Length: 240
Image (tube, rainbow, N blue to C red; front, side, top):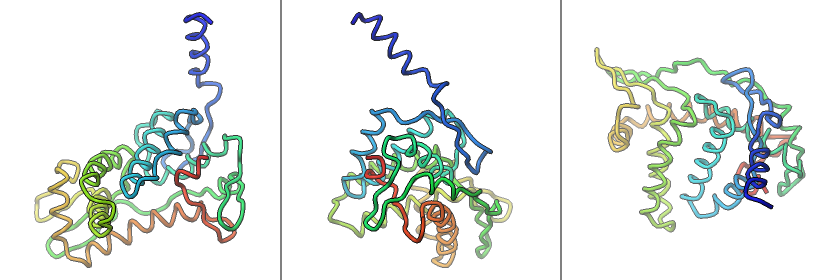
């Protein structure tokens, strides 16, 4: 095979227009996305296996692949599950094995529904208001990149510090602005250390309300991934 023949064939493989999938999501009516390549599948199957850092790396890889294959700029984190199910359905094995049953991916896709939550979502503190948001995949990835580097500095055996670190990164990504008096702080303008300093000094009853908001997003994901009482986990085994 000549170099030109090889390149011509790679160009054929790279032509994605004919093989793009239509996916219903909440941010838009639907988007087009290119199925996983074998290289992408390998990257997902081999990550998520190395403790807390591996889990964070897996999520970042998932986000990167979605953004690369869809070319959409503002996908929200609640768009991730419907997109991943559509990508998983295109694989040769269309059933997912759990400890209890086998679930057909198409049955999960049929459970899609719009994510509905009134935004902006305000939380009132004493003398200030915190406005919550749903982060985009890009915003989440910026925080994940820093979190992954910080986790590498910790031992996997120190579970307490790892969990504490992850929470310190999880909470601020859902905060849009903080208003006090006539002043407004945009969380996007702060460094990670500044964000963590704010979170660590918030009253527990305020952070609990932020956590309740985060759980509403998680519950949406779980509602799509649960079939006949059995929930499917999206991890490295999901893409095998």
